[in-house]
Image (cartoon, rainbow, N blue to C red; front, top):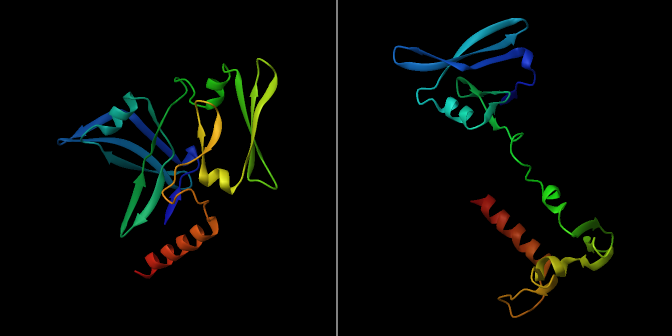
Length: 177
């Protein structure tokens, strides 16, 4: 069983000051388990891992309390602060490109992929992705076409229903063990 601390009003950490006592290094934090009553806890950090991570740009997130065995565990996550770095979203990198890729969900096919050239303002190619395209073909980056994969079975099309049946059999066999 675990419980996420969802509110900053019941949790206060101070990772700025490392305390030392009898050769042990620790941080102090306060947790309000009862309304308006804070209990102080000591988090040991002899190897100074928290400080190293915070120097690398990590920031503390809200903790999770879990009960394991007869112990109450406090998980202190540190998340990477990406505000300073450039975004890794493909939209930013693709905004300078002249080729645009659009994907629409379909009724007859799984999806429809359209390639649009912004310089000429016209659609270059359109692909209808079905079972055959997803499992038997691969996209060739040199000429921009979907080509058949070189399969081990000699070019026979995939039987998705048979693959799902075999997958279900494998799951049942693993569950029996």
